[in-house]
Image (cartoon, helix red, strand yellow):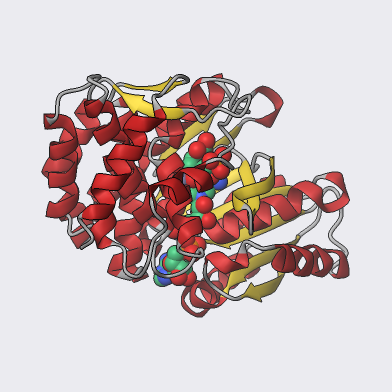
Length: 370
Ligand SMILES: NC(=O)c1ccc[n+]([C@@H]2O[C@H](COP(=O)([O-])OP(=O)(O)OC[C@H]3O[C@@H](n4cnc5c(N)ncnc54)[C@H](O)[C@@H]3O)[C@@H](O)[C@H]2O)c1
Ligand SMILES: O=C(O)C(=O)C[C@@H](O)[C@H](O)[C@H](O)COP(=O)(O)O
Ligand SMILES: [Zn+2]
């Protein structure tokens, strides 16, 4: 088993990564408990596949548990399900010193983390990420929240988990589309901070997607280590944490444009968004045209969405997409900021981007949709 430590002073915690962690959950969680009881929040798909195993593991360690099972999908990151979750936690008489377990993908992790942040002004929670996306990204770093009709993740809080248990075996039950969406965030790490990691993915991506547990563990470990290093330096995104947003200014606008639906999953939006951010960087003369082409080539080899043409149904025009970007949390004094790059692995936060260039990139990308 691998452990990545997230160093945040009194809010520090470990991320454990490896096969068989679900079965060890009781032993891992016991040291955190004030009494031998936890509450679990999960969703239907994950509950059907993995909740019984978790409950058995907790029972074996003498820990009682109750579970709330929510509907799956991005629409669950909503005011309605936040209310439902918080009211259920209160009904369960969850105390300040108790621990809430979030068992699921990024949707459950974000919703439950935010519920824990506001319940009795803050209770501890453990992330048990079950999707690739949640293991490499959303379970680590403490960004929690829900979506608003105005945009993605617009209501939330920074609330760090007390422990993250990433069981690599549970990735085996993911649908290929969900696995590849998570892979979009993995590629993002290479794109933002490490050409060496990107090259490793070019070599190992297909075997990793095919199910190799050692390669999956290594991809999760390296991604989480990169995120932990950035978060330790800038927990609340005053500066360089924004690099983790590579691809998201575009991606979040596309998710809003597609109604947070199955038309476009978050990780798919991120992959397309990374390609658009690289394309914009190349048009601005910051990087060679070879970089966006190489990124797209890798996404194509993995069988992933990489262009606006890969999104089914209608999309707004370039102005409409730029409008949606106006709700991005990186906006300062009314000005959009983008994560651009000088090369693969060399991203930076750009404050003064010529929006006519972004507009042209979007128009040309939209034109390929026929
Ligand atoms: N907080 C952060 O830092 C952060 C980072 C990245 C993404 N996010 C958020 O995460 C969300 C996306 O996360 P996601 O891609 O995990 O979505 P998700 O939680 O909807 O999971 C994707 C799909 O996989 C299914 N699933 C999950 N685990 C499974 C398993 N082991 N076996 C079979 N099916 C399984 C789910 O039921 C769902 O249908 C978005 O809302 C995004 O904004 C947050
Ligand atoms: O942890 C971060 O910081 C990230 O930006 C990670 C992203 O992958 C994630 O999607 C995050 O929720 C986006 O943040 P937001 O602040 O743009 O909502
Ligand atoms: Zn993301």
